[in-house]
Image (cartoon, rainbow, N blue to C red; front, side, top):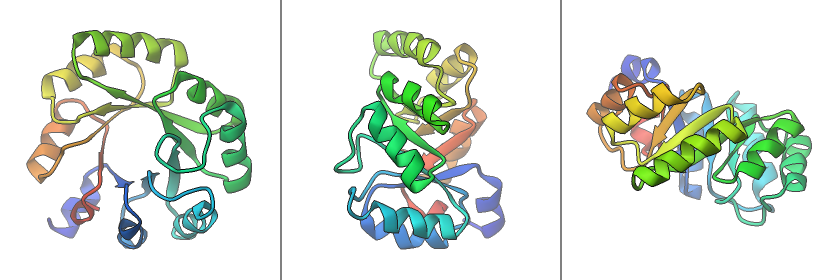
Length: 183
Protein backbone atom coordinates (compact mmCIF):
# COMPACT_ATOMS: atom_id res chain seq x y z
CA UNK A 1 0.00 0.00 0.00
CA UNK A 2 1.44 3.39 -0.97
CA UNK A 3 2.26 5.98 1.69
CA UNK A 4 -0.31 8.44 0.35
CA UNK A 5 -3.02 5.77 0.50
CA UNK A 6 -2.08 4.99 4.11
CA UNK A 7 -2.51 8.61 5.15
CA UNK A 8 -5.86 8.82 3.39
CA UNK A 9 -7.40 5.92 5.31
CA UNK A 10 -8.75 6.59 8.83
CA UNK A 11 -6.98 3.75 10.64
CA UNK A 12 -6.45 2.98 14.30
CA UNK A 13 -3.53 0.74 15.23
CA UNK A 14 -4.88 -2.18 17.19
CA UNK A 15 -1.83 -3.28 19.19
CA UNK A 16 -2.52 -6.78 20.45
CA UNK A 17 1.03 -8.12 20.86
CA UNK A 18 4.19 -6.60 22.38
CA UNK A 19 6.12 -7.09 19.14
CA UNK A 20 3.70 -4.66 17.39
CA UNK A 21 4.60 -1.73 19.64
CA UNK A 22 7.70 -0.66 17.71
CA UNK A 23 5.87 -0.69 14.36
CA UNK A 24 2.99 1.31 15.82
CA UNK A 25 5.43 3.85 17.28
CA UNK A 26 6.99 4.36 13.84
CA UNK A 27 3.68 4.41 12.00
CA UNK A 28 1.69 7.36 10.69
CA UNK A 29 -1.46 6.42 12.62
CA UNK A 30 -2.60 8.98 15.16
CA UNK A 31 -4.52 6.60 17.43
CA UNK A 32 -3.61 3.37 19.17
CA UNK A 33 -5.97 0.93 20.86
CA UNK A 34 -3.65 -0.80 23.32
CA UNK A 35 -4.59 -4.40 24.00
CA UNK A 36 -1.32 -5.81 25.27
CA UNK A 37 0.92 -5.39 28.27
CA UNK A 38 0.13 -5.23 31.94
CA UNK A 39 -0.10 -2.75 34.76
CA UNK A 40 3.68 -3.04 35.32
CA UNK A 41 4.65 -2.21 31.70
CA UNK A 42 1.86 0.25 31.01
CA UNK A 43 3.68 3.43 32.06
CA UNK A 44 6.56 2.81 29.66
CA UNK A 45 4.33 1.77 26.75
CA UNK A 46 1.96 4.72 27.12
CA UNK A 47 4.86 7.17 27.52
CA UNK A 48 6.45 5.96 24.28
CA UNK A 49 3.21 6.38 22.34
CA UNK A 50 2.54 9.80 23.82
CA UNK A 51 6.09 10.96 23.03
CA UNK A 52 5.40 10.20 19.36
CA UNK A 53 2.17 12.20 19.50
CA UNK A 54 -0.21 9.25 19.40
CA UNK A 55 -3.54 9.15 21.19
CA UNK A 56 -3.74 6.12 23.49
CA UNK A 57 -6.91 4.20 24.30
CA UNK A 58 -6.50 1.28 26.73
CA UNK A 59 -8.70 -1.78 26.33
CA UNK A 60 -9.67 -2.60 29.92
CA UNK A 61 -10.43 -6.25 29.27
CA UNK A 62 -7.18 -6.93 27.40
CA UNK A 63 -4.41 -5.28 29.44
CA UNK A 64 -3.50 -7.47 32.41
CA UNK A 65 -3.82 -6.21 35.96
CA UNK A 66 -6.40 -3.52 35.29
CA UNK A 67 -9.81 -3.70 36.88
CA UNK A 68 -13.04 -2.83 35.11
CA UNK A 69 -14.42 -0.56 37.82
CA UNK A 70 -14.61 3.23 38.05
CA UNK A 71 -11.52 3.45 40.29
CA UNK A 72 -9.43 1.70 37.64
CA UNK A 73 -10.66 4.05 34.92
CA UNK A 74 -9.96 7.10 37.09
CA UNK A 75 -6.49 5.73 37.92
CA UNK A 76 -5.68 5.30 34.21
CA UNK A 77 -6.92 8.80 33.41
CA UNK A 78 -5.02 10.50 36.24
CA UNK A 79 -1.84 8.45 36.19
CA UNK A 80 -1.26 7.92 32.47
CA UNK A 81 -3.23 10.83 30.97
CA UNK A 82 -4.64 8.55 28.29
CA UNK A 83 -7.19 9.82 25.81
CA UNK A 84 -9.65 7.06 26.56
CA UNK A 85 -10.62 3.47 27.16
CA UNK A 86 -12.10 0.63 25.15
CA UNK A 87 -14.53 -1.69 26.92
CA UNK A 88 -17.49 -3.96 26.47
CA UNK A 89 -18.77 -2.89 29.89
CA UNK A 90 -21.31 -0.05 30.14
CA UNK A 91 -20.15 0.77 33.67
CA UNK A 92 -16.63 1.45 32.40
CA UNK A 93 -18.05 3.73 29.71
CA UNK A 94 -19.85 5.80 32.36
CA UNK A 95 -16.70 5.83 34.50
CA UNK A 96 -14.69 7.22 31.57
CA UNK A 97 -17.14 10.09 31.17
CA UNK A 98 -16.85 10.86 34.92
CA UNK A 99 -13.04 10.73 34.66
CA UNK A 100 -13.07 13.18 31.77
CA UNK A 101 -11.71 10.83 29.13
CA UNK A 102 -13.24 9.38 25.97
CA UNK A 103 -14.76 5.93 25.63
CA UNK A 104 -15.18 3.34 22.93
CA UNK A 105 -17.84 0.70 23.56
CA UNK A 106 -16.91 -2.52 21.81
CA UNK A 107 -19.82 -4.66 20.62
CA UNK A 108 -20.01 -8.04 18.93
CA UNK A 109 -22.55 -8.70 16.20
CA UNK A 110 -23.03 -12.44 16.58
CA UNK A 111 -26.74 -12.39 15.76
CA UNK A 112 -29.74 -10.06 15.52
CA UNK A 113 -30.49 -10.24 19.24
CA UNK A 114 -26.91 -9.22 20.09
CA UNK A 115 -27.16 -6.19 17.79
CA UNK A 116 -30.51 -5.15 19.31
CA UNK A 117 -29.10 -5.46 22.82
CA UNK A 118 -26.02 -3.48 21.78
CA UNK A 119 -28.13 -0.63 20.34
CA UNK A 120 -30.01 -0.37 23.65
CA UNK A 121 -26.78 -0.51 25.63
CA UNK A 122 -25.22 2.24 23.46
CA UNK A 123 -28.28 4.42 24.00
CA UNK A 124 -27.99 4.03 27.77
CA UNK A 125 -24.20 4.20 28.19
CA UNK A 126 -23.64 6.95 25.59
CA UNK A 127 -20.04 6.12 24.63
CA UNK A 128 -18.08 8.60 22.52
CA UNK A 129 -17.53 5.97 19.83
CA UNK A 130 -18.64 2.41 19.12
CA UNK A 131 -16.45 -0.41 17.82
CA UNK A 132 -18.28 -3.13 15.91
CA UNK A 133 -16.70 -6.58 15.76
CA UNK A 134 -16.19 -8.23 13.34
CA UNK A 135 -15.79 -5.49 10.77
CA UNK A 136 -16.54 -7.53 7.65
CA UNK A 137 -20.29 -6.97 7.48
CA UNK A 138 -21.26 -4.11 5.12
CA UNK A 139 -25.02 -4.45 5.70
CA UNK A 140 -24.64 -4.57 9.48
CA UNK A 141 -22.25 -1.58 9.37
CA UNK A 142 -24.79 0.46 7.36
CA UNK A 143 -27.69 -0.53 9.61
CA UNK A 144 -25.85 0.16 12.87
CA UNK A 145 -24.47 3.49 11.63
CA UNK A 146 -28.02 4.64 10.88
CA UNK A 147 -29.20 3.66 14.38
CA UNK A 148 -26.50 5.24 16.54
CA UNK A 149 -25.24 8.79 16.78
CA UNK A 150 -21.63 8.02 17.65
CA UNK A 151 -18.71 7.59 15.24
CA UNK A 152 -18.41 3.93 14.26
CA UNK A 153 -15.15 2.00 14.36
CA UNK A 154 -15.05 -1.47 12.82
CA UNK A 155 -12.41 -4.10 13.37
CA UNK A 156 -11.72 -7.79 13.49
CA UNK A 157 -10.96 -10.22 10.67
CA UNK A 158 -10.12 -7.40 8.22
CA UNK A 159 -7.10 -8.42 6.13
CA UNK A 160 -7.05 -6.45 2.85
CA UNK A 161 -7.20 -2.87 1.62
CA UNK A 162 -10.37 -3.80 -0.27
CA UNK A 163 -12.01 -4.89 3.01
CA UNK A 164 -10.92 -1.62 4.65
CA UNK A 165 -12.40 0.42 1.82
CA UNK A 166 -15.62 -1.65 1.84
CA UNK A 167 -16.05 -1.04 5.57
CA UNK A 168 -15.50 2.71 5.11
CA UNK A 169 -17.84 2.84 2.13
CA UNK A 170 -20.47 1.07 4.22
CA UNK A 171 -20.43 3.81 6.84
CA UNK A 172 -17.54 3.08 9.20
CA UNK A 173 -15.69 6.18 10.38
CA UNK A 174 -12.52 4.28 11.28
CA UNK A 175 -11.05 0.83 10.84
CA UNK A 176 -9.15 -0.67 13.77
CA UNK A 177 -6.57 -3.10 12.41
CA UNK A 178 -3.68 -5.09 13.86
CA UNK A 179 -1.76 -5.59 10.61
CA UNK A 180 1.13 -3.10 10.67
CA UNK A 181 1.41 -2.97 6.87
CA UNK A 182 -1.66 -0.69 6.92
CA UNK A 183 -0.42 1.63 9.65
